[in-house]
Length: 251
Image (cartoon, helix red, strand yellow):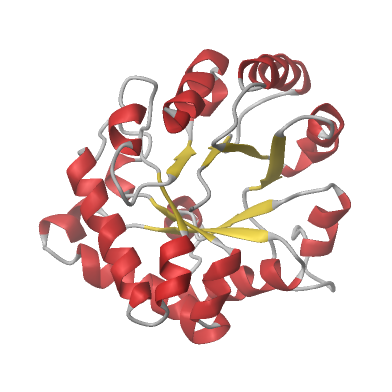
């Protein structure tokens, strides 16, 4: 059975007091969750406090990015070893905001993915298309290219130790959401493409959906056969919403 995972992506939000209040509520709200895993990916400065709060709970934590370099003169970068020092399980790589706002092309994303795996972290590999690309009918081509870069560097078998998150860029933070069928179609495309190379890896691969997932649409999205959870942005900052999304995955 594939692992079901809801991961919160706080992006550049939070402070110590707000984070503590949020996490305490979420810890209580998902304490009885059995069939789904919960994680939060937080800004680097809060990893220590999040580790202290979550270390004895059923919630894991991770970072929103990571350097492809192990160490050296890379001012401002954060290495995989540093993330391991703070008990991280996951590292998001290739988020569309990193690709579009900070110029991270697929080669860099692949290098970060491999660095994370080599350090024992589980990369959450984000893939997705813009509105223009969807309207041009090139969604599958874009997704395939993004996945190919990782597979070319790390091999298809590496996906057995990774999570893939399909996030249509046009649905991130816009209030727009891909319909359950639109999301399912892309998830099925991803899984079938990987199955052509390794059926076992594809069958067991956790593929999340991300893009304005909320309490009122999570259950319908998660009911799709190839959607194994969500990478949650705005709703992960509101305890009641995030808890509802987590429980929607279990139902």
